[in-house]
Amino acid sequence: MQAKHMTITLTSGHKTLVLGKGHPYRLRSVQGLEAAPVAIASAPNAGMHGDTVTNVRLEARSLVLGGTIAYLDDLERLRERLARFLSPHEEGLCTIDYCGTKRQIGYRVEAFSIDEMANLWAPMDFSITLFCADPMLHSTDSYGRNIAEYLPQFALPFCCTAEKKSIMGYRKTSNTIVLKNDGDTAVGLKAVIAAVRGPVNDPVLKNEATGQQIGMKMTLAQGDTLTISTLPRQKQILLNGENAMMKMDRTSDLTFALTPGDNLLCYEAADGRSNMDVRLYYTPEYLGV
Image (spheres, rainbow, N blue to C red):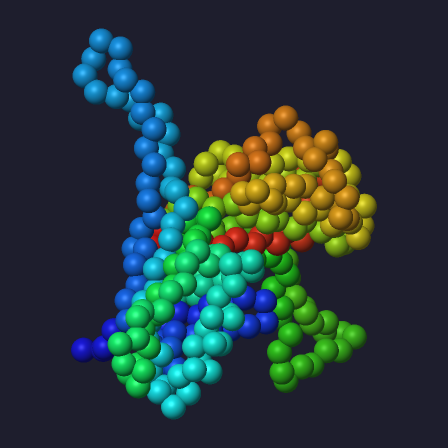
């Protein structure tokens, strides 16, 4: 049976601190990875038993890491490095590797303490508390896909003559694609629509699984790039880097998201659909690890 293992890597700016087996900072215990606190709001029912749930949200979570400085010959230097690394004034990224499953979460240092040293020659135990304002754990991989791609056909040995021409690539005839979200919750995405081969009129991106769509009332000239973000706290529509939110049509929904499981997405345009490149980027999110 494969032994369980966990390694936690803290990254802040250009600095990195690793806690785990085989490192100067050993990991003894971890709390808070399994789930975030849940806040449930409800209202009393009129004339009936019980309440009606009006809202469910995840609150910020705290990760409590218990560790040991095991290298006795270098104890004081490692202690000073640990104290200087854990600055509450800097944001950081915590990466968890638990038996090969990797997740990431942003943090700020909430508390740091070193246990009372009854013996100056014994290993030193410490505790780190990380405050995570966004309680979701993110995949370490961000997925990107061009759903209007050309498929290459070039191969060796290569032979091409004036009488017998060769196909170097072909365009997918379907304007749909299935994107899998293997996370635990719906996630927003970033769509980059480029008018590569000519103008594009009124581009539309649809999620057939949810019925949501984002449509634009505008013409993209060849070379233009339209960027649409439905990520939380990052919702925006940019045309060549400039705000184009006013060009969004009334049927658009900026809560456009990929639900857990398979999502059938398609792109359309009033004219010039074959001139589009459509790249989608998203990162699955998880409740725990």
